[in-house]
Amino acid sequence: MGGGDEGRQWSVERGHVPAPAADQPARERCADGSHPPCCPYYHEAIELIGRRWTGAIVGVLIHRSTLRFGEIAQSVPELSDRLLSERMKELEARGVVVRTVRPGRPVRVEYELTEMGRALAPAVHELERWAQRWLAQR
Image 1 (tube, rainbow, N blue to C red):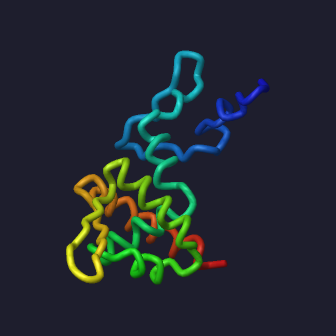
Image 2: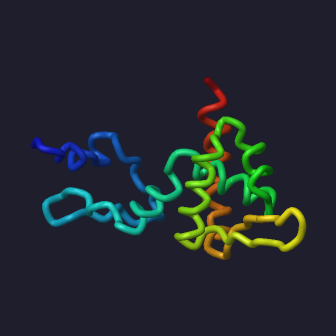
């Protein structure tokens, strides 16, 4: 096999995929024995949240609710203002974050997660636990 088919070699037998527990169904396979293609929705979600700094931004908003631009920037210190602005616009356009302009002097712009964004909390918390277990050991 070549040309990108290496992923089809993954199997329980070869030790790449953990065998399901006795009370769980076996993983789905295609008729040729390969695994089905990656779910397009899963792929889209990973591409969105997996973009550089996006996961950190979402994580900060999950833990702190409503924040101003500068507060997000302080929470993720290595992130440039330009890139933070770009990521916030992307998250707003995708419906993950809502931007609210509060009148006054100076005008306050606040960001918070939408229902869709808040629904990421269990996944973010699980990823945090995984990181503590596997990455903190280094």
